[in-house]
Image 1 (cartoon, rainbow, N blue to C red):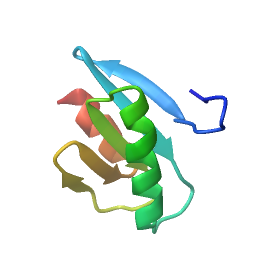
Image 2 (cartoon, rainbow, N blue to C red):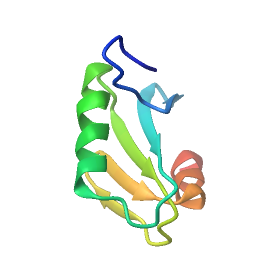
Image 3 (cartoon, helix red, strand yellow):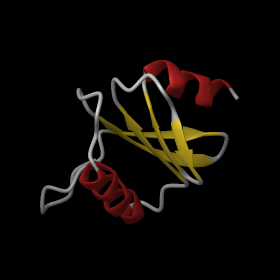
Length: 79
């Protein structure tokens, strides 16, 4: 999803009647600005959960926000 002012979400998924917004980064160390941008953009579509998918092997969860690698995302989908 991309807005006219170039704000974007890489992927939107509907999982068990929830809307999930995903931002995909190549880095293993995403910065706070990456999560802030994801949250601001996810607010536009009223996403229930927000995922920052990167090369970080340790998953971090904080309420509706998750920072994880691809395997961690798959685990969340399978729950």
